Length: 74
Image 1 (cartoon, rainbow, N blue to C red):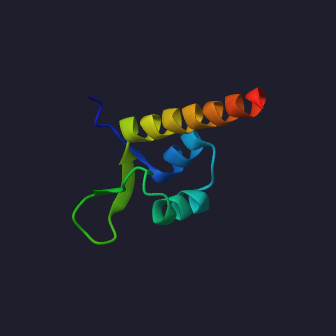
Image 2 (tube, rainbow, N blue to C red; image 1 turned 45 degrees about the vertical axis):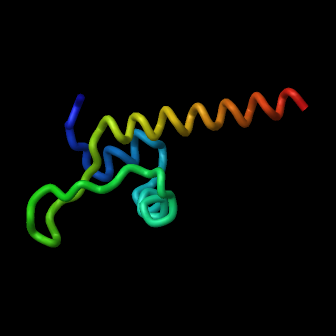
Image 3 (tube, rainbow, N blue to C red; image 1 turned 90 degrees about the vertical axis):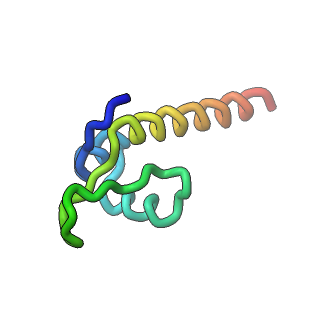
């Protein structure tokens, strides 16, 4: 398992959204990957596990395709 940590800007770029959208998803979307604090200080850098970002992106893509296919069947 890849436990590489990607920072907020890089994760946002991978998902194709802004950092502000990332914060909204962190607060509202229970399935969104959890933040990882890099260091012990309260204001230390934050990031995400790369494999969790990739899994979230894959799951989102699958859900979109499922919805798209259901729309075609109607």
